[in-house]
Image (tube, rainbow, N blue to C red; front, side, top):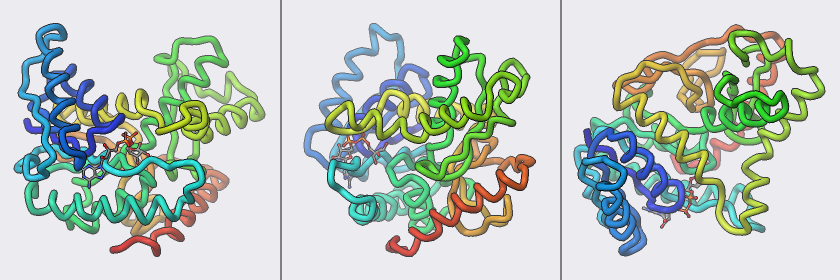
Length: 306
Ligand code: APR
């Protein structure tokens, strides 16, 4: 199994470390910045004896090193800087994504592609259109991170271990995300039995604002511990063909009544990528909110160079 990670910054490098610790396969780290990917790969390889993983780890500034990868994770791009509008970020990262995906199409046509670069739903769409790959082979990491963040906030509120909370977040990775209390369970019991609507609303707001909260505290850059954990978890499910259901950004072709956009929904992942899109039973209010979230993505699609 060959796993390539394009972008050896905070999220890319930490994803590489976690994937290495899962012992999933050979890892190739690529970054446009000279020496960065190679330096980080040497450092990571030096930990092998201590941490007990034994696959090949390499780094390069040459994108051709992704050749014949089974899985390619894209973390290349800019994080939003203070004063930068979403449109400016969109324009810059679109160009990077497009260049990267032209190379993936040529060098790794059999790969499953996982997009991490923001704005996530739009970049996943751009990756799908640029590679021309089947829709099961291109997915985005967003909803699983949002779910993990929500689980953490619920666990703190209820003083429970986060591992006992099974959350469900769908919709856009950003302001339009939709945490579903009805589908969130604690030991099989709906969260609605534990939390009032007002409390849930507060935790939802906290989840939506979590990324920005972290950016403001860090001063430069954005979150990487939880994003890389979510990346590695999804790579593991695919590499080991675990067939687990997890939130992922997927191209919809009529599911949930939505067509021709990429958005977060529960998916069963396996070696073929997105093996099934799970259609949850939503209330009218939830359906309306999901449509609203889809519309916000659709409005921005016009700005993509597809
Ligand atoms: N090819 C390869 N690497 C590139 C390219 C390119 N064309 N363009 C930029 N990069 C690299 C940069 O050199 C940098 O090392 O992408 C890396 C991005 O790393 P960071 O700036 O540390 O950003 P990070 O925190 O890892 O976030 C990356 O993931 O979560 C999202 O919003 C986040 O879009 C951002 C992305």
